[in-house]
Image (cartoon, rainbow, N blue to C red; front, side):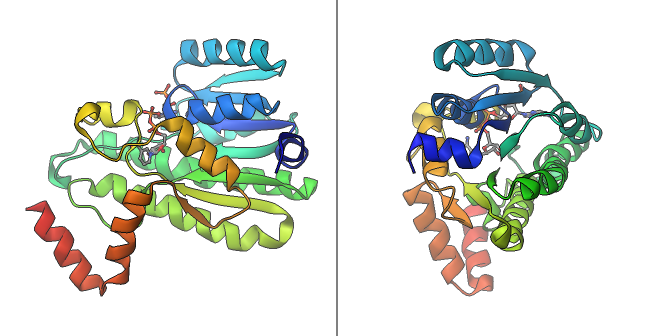
Length: 260
Ligand SMILES: NC(=O)c1ccc[n+]([C@@H]2O[C@H](COP(=O)([O-])OP(=O)(O)OC[C@H]3O[C@@H](n4cnc5c(N)ncnc54)[C@H](OP(=O)(O)O)[C@@H]3O)[C@@H](O)[C@H]2O)c1
């Protein structure tokens, strides 16, 4: 699909959550280059304003910044209201965060916030956009999950569970909206060089098989019509395909042996 065809189907506006850094910012940059007008949302107003100005000037597009904390239960409805007058053809539900370590050691408030951002927000935003995209008869949604959503990952259990939720939601929506002209792609990245691994205490220079956010976002946009799912990393796809091909109890035992 060339940029004009992409814009005709998924433009003239897109909403990108988690646009202030990493994969979300990469989505915004690539969509801007395709001349799609952008609603950018996250908590950090400064990063969003800077990105919005830069993309508006570089690509002669319109941009709108909506600062929102998706851990706040009211935020999805506020975003839907703030964008009600825009013809949005693409929702990129990307905002998310994780935490590592044994489940018992994680902070309860942070876990509750993680469920709001990684599960409740995509649930309510997709719900809000179905009638809007349905009325257009064309458009798309990209839900960013993780390879950790494919199988329970010890020492990352809360996050892994939220990403399983996102993958279920995205795959189910793909099936439900198939006849409505709305393309739904669930993106399952492996390790990607963003702020996320740094916030979780990793030294990114020591990680192997790490992809750049631009590659991940580009793969998703290139494959938006090829749902239901896209695992962006061949390395992680091979690992999780192997686990998923095993009897579940054996795969869980293999995971347990890695965890201890
Ligand atoms: N990097 C990886 O290795 C990897 C692997 C698999 C999946 N993923 C997924 O990819 C997505 C993007 O993550 P990333 O790797 O690009 O990480 P990132 O650079 O940390 O970006 C996360 C984005 O989510 C936003 N966000 C976080 N908490 C939020 C909140 N409470 N309210 C609103 N926005 C919030 C952040 O914006 P503010 O801080 O400005 O609010 C930021 O824009 C996430 O869903 C993540 O789980 C990442």
